[in-house]
Amino acid sequence: MDGSLDGSGRLLRRGLKLAHLRLMAALGETGAIGLAAARLGVTQPAASRLLAEVEDLVGRPLHLRSGRGIVLTPEGQALARRAARALAEVTSAEREMGDLGRGLSGHVRLGAVTGPALDRVLPALRAARLALPNVTTEVEVAPSEPLADLLLAGRLDFALARLPENREAALFDLEPLGEEQVELVARPGHALARRREIAPRDLLDYDWVLPGPGTLLRRTVLERLASLGLPPPPGRLATSSFLLTLALLRESNAIAPLASAVARRFASGPEAGLVVLPLDLGIVVPAFGLMTLRGARLTPAAERLRDLVRTQVP
Image (cartoon, rainbow, N blue to C red):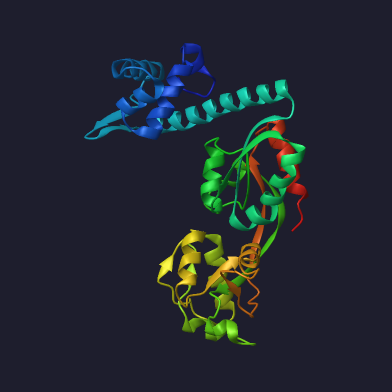
């Protein structure tokens, strides 16, 4: 590796500009010089000149030509990734200055896994309508892995999630909030729902709708079944989509594990679409928490909404 790039800030002293960072971030997302140019609002020749300037500053190629565009070299990928983070920080700084200038106003982007989204985020948003009337909110509901990636990309302020095992723990701060109980659900009228008692092995007579491979809920369910001496359940579909899970349960005899907060909400009321099966397998998903990028400073509006989320007790 070129010894002149030693992390001492020489690229900035050599003349690395914001326009260079914007181009590299756009190339990292689009993989095409034309698309990157359009995103920046410049001509393709101008974008090519910017790329050439960056490569001259770095002292090595940052891209290779391919049939459908360009492929960034490992060095190019590293610079594109960091450029996106740097630009996200500039955007956050702009938002924070605006919040400070306007008081309790601004825009907050938060993410949550499904159970905490219902148990904590919804009541926090109701409270925020009174306490923070000038704050707008954007909520992303997804598994922990994509939420961690959105945090890393600077597209979320904070998340209610778990630290994924395949992400570097040192990149995040996590404030544990609680565990999630898991219930088994099925459609109203399901044969198991009419029983007073269910043996765990009876569950294997039906298809299961499980979360996608590699997800924490799926792994927790399978480990708990194994501890009870049961094999993996029959399952023809794996999905992290709650809407698809709900549709499949309503139209078949399948059963599915859901976070208790979700199961109880959709199994209550006269027109409930689900029933909770009368069997507690003792499935508990490890603690989730408030997750932020390590060292990241939240805007005042994000801090206020985070505090509202923190105080919600299911």
